[in-house]
Image 1 (spheres, helix red, strand yellow):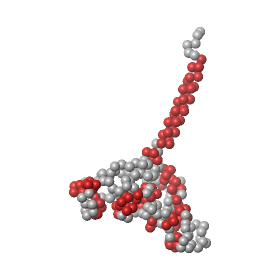
Image 2 (cartoon, one colour; image 1 turned 180 degrees about the horizontal axis):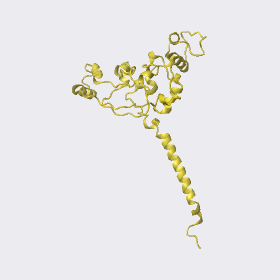
Image 3 (spheres, helix red, strand yellow; image 1 turned 90 degrees about the horizontal axis):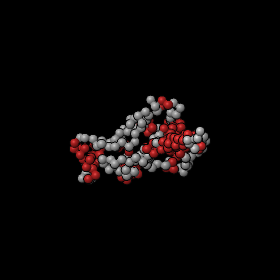
Image 4 (cartoon, rainbow, N blue to C red; image 1 turned 135 degrees about the vertical axis):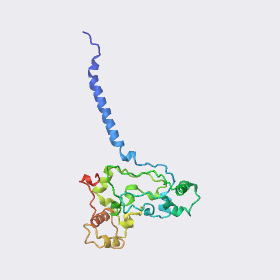
Length: 243
């Protein structure tokens, strides 16, 4: 009996399965690599109802983060400033600026400004701002160089690996609590003798004398602070972040 199909079609099902396997693997790899906060969140820069510039207020005018985000040291969540906070200055400064129309309307009507939230922790993850701030974790570690952003954008991925990298090695992100809100701070800015007098000497350097021109690395500073402040970031216990 004659064959209805050519001989090469005998291997067609196998070829189809191989192609589907390759395509499926590529699809899974693409989703695994690109559907992460590093790609879906980093760079997010919504247009806000008021064109507020952190670069002007924080970098140029030197305003402290806590003037607007006043709960950050004492509450789990950082607050967005109320219209009253804006009007403390702008009832006198730039009070006729067209950029502040939404602020004046909010003040006149009592309706809050509808700011668009940029940084948001997933509902299944627990994060407490005050705990991190009071242990020497700067705004810079999670939010980037906000003081030099004309428009705030999402600078860090906020992924699980991003958090765990810091929890496993907290010394990489700790700084003296007096400099937590100084987003331009660098380890070379540290007054080492004063630091040692307050927090002690770095582990393994207890016998060393520190002159006024001495320098410490970020790791040495972080290890000293972690020991002095009792930093014990949850790593092995999932309940530390998923409660």
